[in-house]
Image (cartoon, rainbow, N blue to C red; front, top):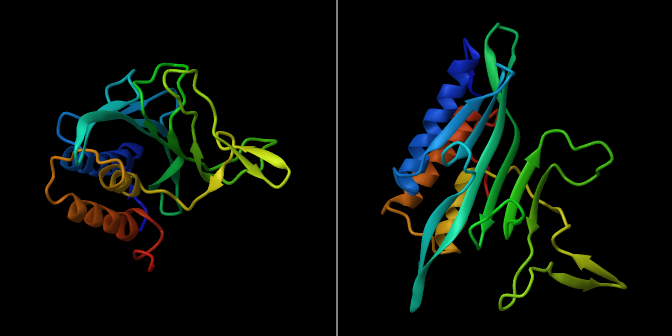
Length: 213
């Protein structure tokens, strides 16, 4: 069942409470989720981190490796629309999940990014749900895209929109912890993610159960 409420605020508050509790549990209570309203009362911008700063620094660890850090950005463009019974229903119009290997400024592209747009811009034909690989740096040299030879062409991975399904933030958190070795304060982080995924499919989505592998 999708998130529904008598007012737009009720819908946004339901989702915001869930996301804040999840982030606090698996990333730490020092990391905050902000939801801000613009000119449209039926729309909200949700992001991880304080307003005006669209990323957080996360510590990493590895066997035999010095401690390090990655920079993570999570944002969603949320809206509500009225349904037949007069209540409102929540919808994600866009999301962005980004991983940076350096502290980003306005010109830095993420190393990894998962994106979704409910409406593909006019003139574009890529998948609404997609994954992209950013530019890399070699020994302090200017960052460059990874180029792959495919047939007679060179493929720029920074411009390739690799199709994905709808990407839950829980899936990205799991990637951070298992693949990038991001430190989590939760010893039970896997159980918390499984619980949150279940809530998405049983409470927040039109789907009724977690999809089978």
